[in-house]
Length: 232
Image (cartoon, rainbow, N blue to C red; front, side, top):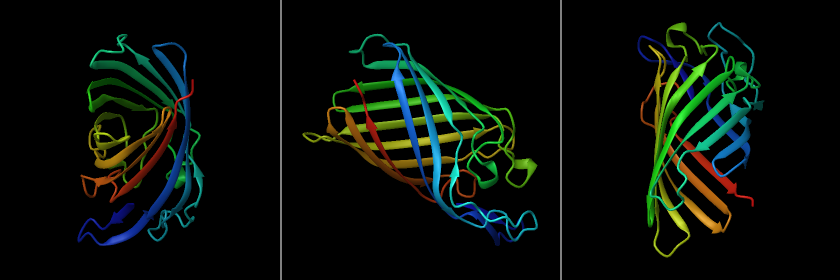
């Protein structure tokens, strides 16, 4: 949730977003063995909270449903050997200003991000990570301009261990954002399972919580479910 507290005493004065249910639809196509292009659209299916009511800023109610920012993305594979234990590449995306920022569903302007990708795998397990930059054309200000969301450093690390003689893998994920200047720098850890039920279909579920309490973007808890199908 997003919670606003008094600077002195820490008393809760407003909960702009108390709980949220969202989903994202994403499609991608391999243009060649090395290049993939795609499109994603996040949607807030349901949410509840005060928005900015009761703190003399706005008495508009929080919209229960909202559309997020559409995202155009690309991945470039730099490793050409399918049997090599190491893999690496580049990822790039542009987030379009299609979401409703007044209801915490979008950015204040377009966003560009790029990352370096790397992974290492052996029989039964895999480790992957990426590091990159997110560049905003407009800062996102929740309440105070002193804690605006500006440009950010992105760090992600994940591991998977395939359980012996089963189509199931155990997942461990960690994500960290380092804000520019005094901007928020949240972190989050999750554990989960991946089920490879069909040759081209995967179901993943994970749950976790923020590891930087009180920081904007660090959730009290979060649950994620994903279905992925790889076409021919």
